[in-house]
Every structure is written in C-alpha cells, then in structure tokens.
Length: 385
Image (cartoon, rainbow, N blue to C red; front, side):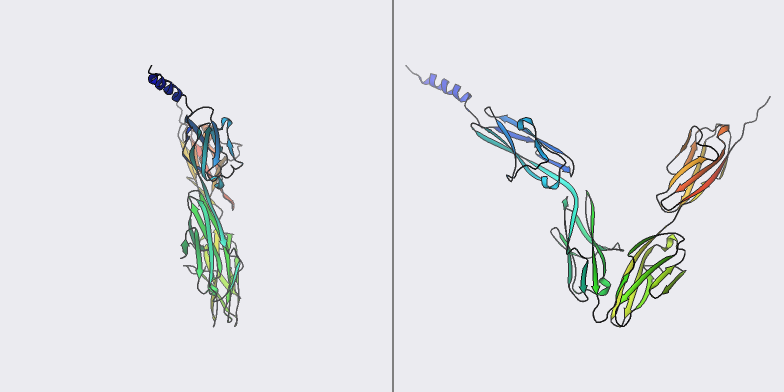
C-alpha cells in the first residue's frame, strides 16, 4: 500500500499550523514635532503565531525616558512633552515561540537654539594679545550663527567650523573693547549670548569706557553721557555721533556730553574717542529717544443730518505702539451703535439727533498720553406744516 499521498497531505496540514516568527511594522515610521509637543507610534502585527509579546526599546538599548509611555498591550508608544533628548530611534520588538521581529520608528524634535560661549567672559586682555571666543550652538533645525558688536547691526567676519563660530583677533587694540553678541537662529527661534571684551592698554595707550552702553530717554529731557579713559599721558576725550553731527544744543566738559531737550531725531549711536600719543580708544552708547503721543482729530468739526454716516479719524504722532480711546464729553458711554476702531476711527452708521456733542479721543503709549476733541453737530431736517 502506497502511503506517500497520505504523508504529503498530513505534512501539509502540519505546516499550516507550524509556528512563524512575528512580522511587525510601525506607523508612522518618522515623526517630527516641536519641543513640548507629543508624538505617538503604533506597532502593528502583520503575522506570526500567537501568543505574541510586544516591547518598545530605544535603538541604543538605553531605558525609555520618564516622559515616554507605552500603552496597554504594548502596541502604542507615546512621547509626551517631547524634549531634545527624546530625538532618535525607537524599536518595537515582537516575540513569540518561533522568534522575534522588529520595526523601527524615528522621532525628530525641533527646538530653538541653545548657545554657549567659551570663554564666557567678561574677558580682560592686554593690548596686543591674541584673543578668540568660541560660540557653540545646538538646535534643530541646525541654527545659523553670526557675531555682531553691541550698538552695531554689521555682521562681523568670523571663522565657522561645524557647530562652532569663532570671533578672533590676532592682536587686540583698545578700540576692540566692547560687548560682542553671538546670535544663533533657526525656524524655532533666536538666541543671543553676550561677552564683554575689555582691552587694557599697554605703553600708556588709552582705554575708554562709557557709563552706559544703552539708554532710553523721553523726548524733551536733558541727557548726559559720561566717558572716562585711562592712559598716559592723559587722553583727550571727544564725542561724535555715528553718520550724523552732534545735536545743535550740546556741551562737552571733561568727557561729559550733555544734550538739552532731546528730540526723536537725536536717537542713534554716540562715540567717545580717547586719544594720546600712544594711540586711541573708542566706546559706544546707543540712545533711543521716545516721545508721548500728540493727538489731533480729522475733521475737528462735523455737520450731519439724521441718517448720515459719521466717520472721524484720530491721528497721533509718537513712539509706537499707540492705543486710542473715544468717549463723549459729559456722558458715561458712547452713543448706541457707535464703534471705535484700533486705528483711531469713530464710526456711526446712521446718526440720530441725540448723537450730537463733543467727542474726545485719548491717544496713549508707554510714555504718556494726549487728547483731541471733535465736535459733532446734527441738524434737524426742515419740517413743513
């Protein structure tokens, strides 16, 4: 009796139930989130003999961080309040009696730049020394780095390799003293770190310094800027303004520059220059002049008939931002249907006789306020008996 056909059938039946190692996949395979956002990955079983055990691991075999949680059953991994340390690969491992299968997910975490200077400063150096300061930045996407001097918008020439941007001097001079800013930026934000470089003079060369490198003042006030300088012989100190003459009403006495009744046009960078026979040194002060609003109404008087539309514009000159508020003189509120806009307009679509009166606009900023009046006259139409 030939048993071969029966054996083949039996073998086929046994293979249909023989154990298979798990087949898994992960969705999504890659996720990109901002720092602080959450991300989830699902491990999906495509085949394999039951029972199957699921486990999530870091690809580097390190333990999952405390903000990484695995849901019931082990299929879903969630990264809550993600941070840069969560970046990398996560591996789903499925195991059964026949073996195991793996699938990998990748998490990218975007975050604003973090910047570190070496040395951190303040940096005191001697005139003629070679000096360098390294700016190292991390961030995702990879940040762009640049150096500038405080008080100037010009980008300095530097040396950049990988994630390090270096500002350097072969031999510093007193005029190199100042505050230098390394800026790193990407799509997630901008980070700046400052270092103060102080060059101490040699051979009696001047070293100038100012009492304040930045100041904000109110229009109409008197301002003083003080500059002192070391050196031998005693340096001569003068003041100038970048790309403009000094304000007309100014005095200079013993390194002190006094400006009386400053205006907005006096904003800018002021330069103290100290000079003697061994050299010169510069120090800088950036001054911003802010002004309270000056308000006017356009027009100042409006004559309308009932049913006409009212539109009055409140205009204001001064430091921004400027806010506007309309009221009616002698009344606790504006007429019904009146609307005031953020740019200073007073609008009534259809006026009534009771809407007439004097309206006041108050324009305000962080420096002060100003008010202007508009008279609204509404005539009754002629009545015929």
